[in-house]
Image (cartoon, rainbow, N blue to C red):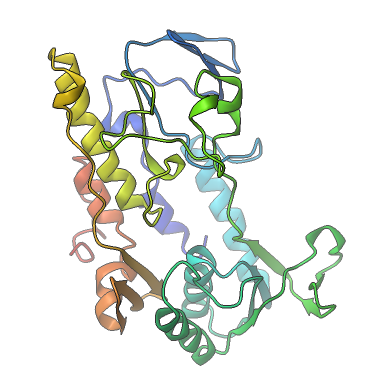
Amino acid sequence: MVDPSFAERQLIEYSEFLPQVKLVTSWATTITETEVSTAHGDQIPYDYLVVASGHIRTESDPVTRDESLLYYKEENDRIKSSSSILIIGGGPTGVEFAGEVADQFPDKKITVVHRGSRLLEFIGSKASQKAEEWLSSKKIDVIVGQSVHLKSASEGLYETSNGETIVADYFFDSTGRPLGTSWLQNTILKGSLDIQCRVAVEKNLLVKGYKNIFAVGDITNIPELKQGFAAMKHAQVVAKNLRTLLGGGSVDKLSAYKPGRAVAVISLGRKEGVAQVSCFTISGVLPGMYKSRDLFVGRTRKTYGLKPLSSDSCCAL
């Protein structure tokens, strides 16, 4: 949204890297032992199933590439025309968005409100402090321990849980979306959900109790940081295991997923970042070179076997 030209590179159509796959665009509504039903009335039979429903989308979310590009363009126009911006949520999305806006539009008044006790609570306090110090150096106001009452907002006035009023021409909600598992309550997998509504899986990523249904990504109950690169590793293990099963191999021959070291990299503007690797924290240009210049788009395109775009060659590391 801060740089619409970036969307041209990051939006990849499934047909670009899965040309022989039939794509059905709809909401999955239920799963039986033999098929998946969709909101559009399709019944799709399966021998093996992979559930990767991530987080909930809304009906208003753009679906096609053209719709997404238009959405980003319209949001960019709103950002450019605003003098003050409110960012709700101090997780990785909120912090990275604040950094992007501050770098691109240094004269705008930016406020970040986070209901937790510190930013980036999923990583250590030292890395969190480094990120907050960087935001403060860009004259970004950071308010922690408070939430924003969006339902009572009117004409650019937003009230926090402590009664503080924030004036903003534009707001960005980065508080996250619920897991995309509620629909599984109406399926044969309802008994596989834990108390956090995550899908319980074996080490081979089969859903517990099933020999032909896998689950990957944030919806799994694997104790690890929920990040994109972890989901990609899940997919690699499941792809290998599917090849084993389709080749006549037994379940006891399947490969196990092994979580890697806890690594988190948060971009801070276009050139800097903060990284936590196990118990070590690194901030500045080095983690920025790793992520901030490209946000892993070039690397992702390469992973999917796509040709690099002109701007990928200077950024991919």
